Amino acid sequence: MKQIKLSTTGWLLLAAFFVSCQQQPQSNDKKTEMQQRPAYAIVIHGGAGTITRASMTPEKEAAYLAALDSALFLGETVLQNGGTALDAVEKTIVFLEDCPLFNAGRGAVFTHEGRNELDASIMDGTTQKAGAVGSVMTVKNPIRLARAVMDKSPHVFLSGRGAEQFAIENQIDTIDPKWFYTDERWKTLQEMLEAEKTKGKTGSLEPETRDYKFGTVGCVALDKEGHLAAGTSTGGMTNKRWNRLGDTPVIGAGTYASDDACAVSCTGHGEFFIRYAVAHDVWALMSYKGLSLADATDFVVNKKLVEKGGEGGLIAVDKNGNIALPFNSEGMYRAYAKPGERKILIYK
Ligand code: ASP
Image 1 (cartoon, helix red, strand yellow):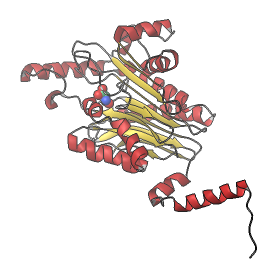
Image 2 (cartoon, helix red, strand yellow):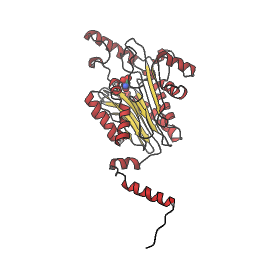
Image 3 (spheres, rainbow, N blue to C red):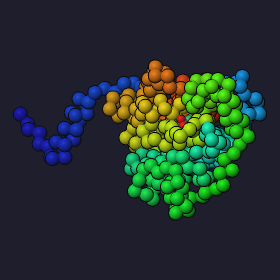
Image 4 (cartoon, helix red, strand yellow):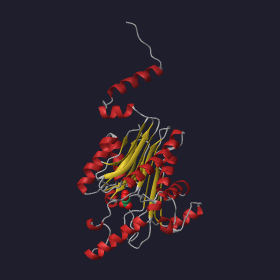
């Protein structure tokens, strides 16, 4: 019998072939997700809550759609031009922070004492570096400060006056707090304070006094190099007290990104998102359990959060460019774009 001689490379190739034959078959869901990796993908949100057609005027609806469209366009352009997912996320969120329609930056909600306290975070899926700021009152674009914390400090999370000092030292724009004033948010606070007085209640989190129109903003992106990033920015919840911080600046709760699986940005009743480490939970289900993005996000938002009573939603993109935008509230301002695909949505 003739003997077949194999070189070292030949043996390696043969071994690799056997190993690949023995690997677990992938579910159809996973296979389809992997086959269609687009050049880039971007998803944004402008908050989840009781957003119904009945509560909306045509003018208001048009304004929201136009703002989401412009924000998406900015991020998309960065990605189309070969920019990084991180830059796309930052630029998109800066735009949304400057838009008074959203509860972040300029349109931030008011605290019990009538102040605007802003929170934001950003995470780089490639390095797993992250930056976050909480309770800043004079920083025009908190997402920029979060990025500076990530890039220029040895820390992840800065808050209050120290964070504002860090902004000044790093040439991040600061501004008169009046910049954040909007009539609509002020009115909402007055209504909530009035409701508290008549009902004799305190705190912002009781169902009767909770402002359901949250309005936080967020963005997740996959760039042409296959890198992921996520960011989120908010004014928190109307009538919050005692320097309350929500999930938005908490890495793993409101924001998470890791190139090995996905990037996630959340919006909703922050206390629940912190308790159940929502953004990290999505990543963990994918990474440890092999769930698809669709299954992981559906489980967390529509099963776990619903069971626990946590209202809200999230946006996510995985390393193969699949996206998910689930929410368990009545609506969520949201939009996404991939090459040849673009959508802007509000209601269910
Ligand atoms: N999650 C934010 C917070 O609790 C609010 C929101 O998303 O609308 O501060």
